[in-house]
Image 1 (tube, one colour):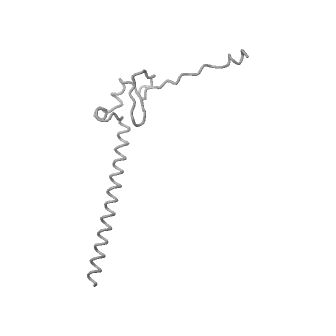
Image 2: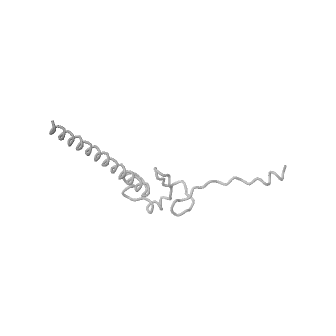
Image 3: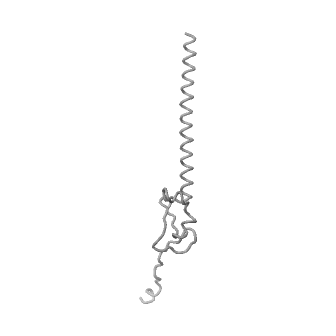
Length: 102
């Protein structure tokens, strides 16, 4: 029985490391609200854009992703509007042609 107890190793603690410098994090860590990346407060000036941090506290990577998604939505909305306008123009042309023949 003693040999089985001696073979058991203590569980390792799971320390979180800084996303920038790789060193273990202390109690004061900065976390991105969108993707959960964390870093030291002294490293945050390298990782966070000051304008974004002041406005929304979002890291540069997340902000770029949000801007890409917003641009995709704008393009999709413009395509929907273009389809509606095209359909209205086709209906108007058909209406004018039918009216002319009658």
